[in-house]
Length: 373
Ligand code: 13P
Ligand code: SF4
Image (cartoon, rainbow, N blue to C red; front, side, top):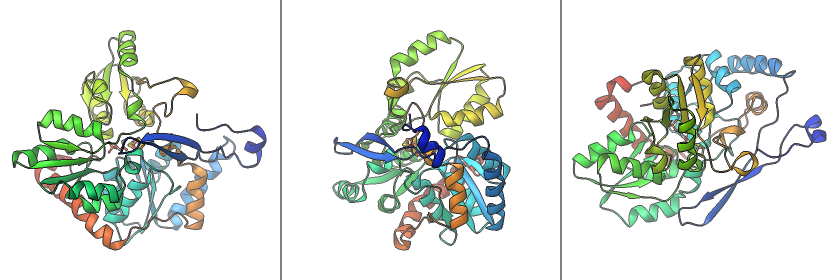
């Protein structure tokens, strides 16, 4: 799925060729971006790699934070070393609150950038800086600025999955769990909204809040691949299973959900609903944490377009998959792959992020520090 590895290649370097990911650009054109799988880890080398990473984290006074979608080995490492596995916002908050001078982020680039914007005085490293996100790629700052300028009567609300420059043009940044509440709050004040970049998330929020929302055209290559007919069939095979859906999914998938939520929201819903089986419509990496928290419960990945070699993501983000044990150790040994954000851009971007953090503190005290404000 992530490119073919020739046996001769594996012996010497164990690096697969990059795969090319297709995504829809904001103007409807086809965009293509590479995703390079990390070097394969053999069972023989894994224990020594993990031990060395732990040593280096200590030596550098570094904290390791990981997203739910990265490889289980990295999730376990974050938890075993006093770091965290969570969503992008909590990853950044955690790094901020932690006394460590260096934050190592296993996720995609916007997550490292958010960590840097909130913690400009700290060093932020990532295993691979080319770990993109189709939402971020489909929302270039220049085109987005023009769009905003053409609609000066609208409050600009952007999703966390954007570049620092896009956040800098926004009035508010939101994550998936707080987006609905912030839009409802703005709607109650009679504000009209411009929302970017995720059209599915935007459409979902528009339907539940009734707000006047103008949407950017972009989607997540992973969630966009979930298919309603196949999900209906899977539900017939598992009549007792509850369906958990991330709001980056199309409306036809959301319509079948027993719970819609952010990554942390999905985990919390599984804990709350008490079913024996769940069908999970988000990146399958999250199931590692769900199994840890709910042993004995069955989790089934929601079906995607195509099967095996014919699906693009197969419910696994190809850019999240770029994080591995080898490239993690490499950045810890070399200090390479540091995230830099232009300080002036970072300062402006922080305003939209801070607005969301302040809102969460004032309106949702229980969510503070929950991992998914
Ligand atoms: P969460 O904020 O819900 O973790 O989502 C991040 C993401 O990229 C989902 O695809
Ligand atoms: Fe972006 Fe989708 Fe990957 Fe999340 S899963 S980082 S939204 S491409």
